[in-house]
Structures are given as structure tokens and as C-alpha cells.
Amino acid sequence: MFIYKARNNHDGKVYIGQTDNFQQRKKNHKTARESRKLTDAIREVGLDSFEWFILSEVPKGNLANRLEHTFIQDFRANDPRLGYNTNLPQFTVTDKETDEAIQQTFETLFA
Image (tube, rainbow, N blue to C red; front, side, top):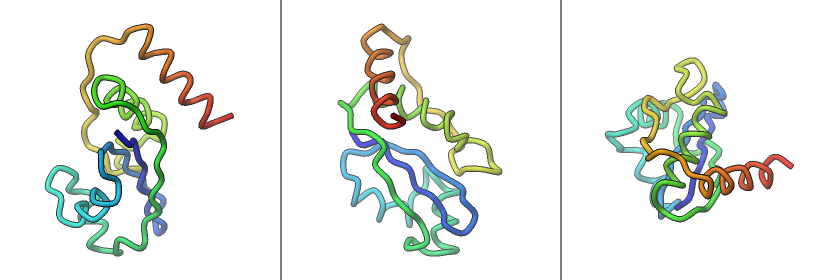
């Protein structure tokens, strides 16, 4: 799974998501029902007004959900003034392996 960030170049708002097909997901955001705020912004300013970043690639499942949740919180993407996320992904109780994988991902990204 790819954990990705979309950033609106007009107002700086961000959206964090996950997908197994990054290019197709970008296109689908033009008509998506589950990320309505992002879809509305794309329709207003155009898909080309967004920068798209792959933040991490991880196996599908609990780690992907936990990492997406962490990125949403870190980028404050669920604050309506700063982002388009309205929900936080659910994940099962954390475990040592998941915590270590997330720590390693953040050390790589922000080193």
C-alpha cells in the first residue's frame, strides 16, 4: 500500500490517504464520494493545482492503517483549517513490530 499526501497549492491544505494504485487513485479523487472535501477542492481549482507525494510504501493491513492515521495527525490533515481528512483510519491495538516499523519509516522520511 502507498500512503500518500495531496497538497493544494492554492491554500496549502493537505489530504492523507492510502491506496494500492497511486496513479488511479489520484484520478478517482475527482469523483470520489468518501473524500468529499478533497473532491470539491479538486473540482474548484483542478487536479493540476495539487502536488502529490508518496510518503511510504507498506504492506496492506494494520500497519498501513496505523501509518496513515499517524500521518493524518502529524500533518493535522483532519483540522478543517489545514486539511481535507474527516475521518481517522481504524486499526487494531498496536504491537511492538508495528511501532518499530512506523518509527523506522519516520526516521527515514525526516532524517
